[in-house]
Image (cartoon, rainbow, N blue to C red; front, side, top):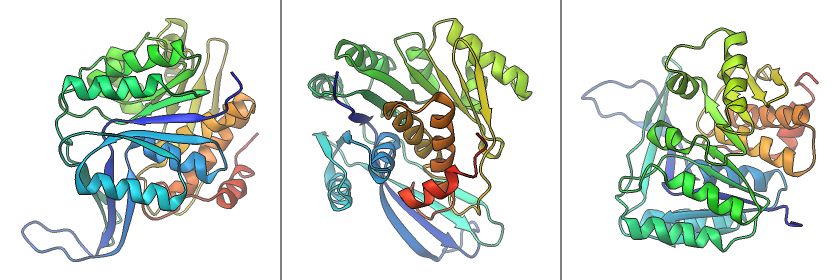
Length: 309
């Protein structure tokens, strides 16, 4: 396949609102300021970052209502190619408030509108008609979609000659293991949910991730560890790299930015190690910005050199 396009799949997108408040207290009316609006949802964030880094991408998503149209408009304004599968119901709005008093971040994330079987079938049929080097499915499943939805998406990608990356959680994650995932991105909490136990020691994290690869649950696993960096496990080795220190403004979209940098590096033919460095630089750039995954190529390039080779 000659295409280098990264198609992202978001079945439960959101209009993201990020703001600050002096303090957050129950009952009181909380006045916010410094508002930022972004087209959000896992796959959409990945597509926005890939586009910002100069990669070829298409954001495929399902949306409805006025908020769905706002997401379309925002992507168009940003120059991010997109294709929407219309659904009934109104796309959710997520709210993140950073409290200045404590520095804590409060996130309010609705579950999203209910889908039906026909909605899921139309999304997958649309995916089956797209050409891609990688398909990146990221985010939660909305109510009404079966937990094997991402497993079906993985099989469609494979049939089209594309590689498949997944970043999700809960039942949707467990139903997708071993179903042809080329790259599985996990948080520590998600790894522990699969392992059924705490996995805090670095050597045990590496053993668990590599053990999943060798058991056929995914061909490669990226484990993000927040301030402790990340590791990338294949059947042959485990690479670990520290986080790049930056002044934190927002963690929303940092994991999606990591995934975008990692996939783009692999598409561009970088080594696994250099792809991991690009991923950590993209994540750091997102954390250092306000709003959801707002990065620039220049910021990422400046941060890559700070990541150990």
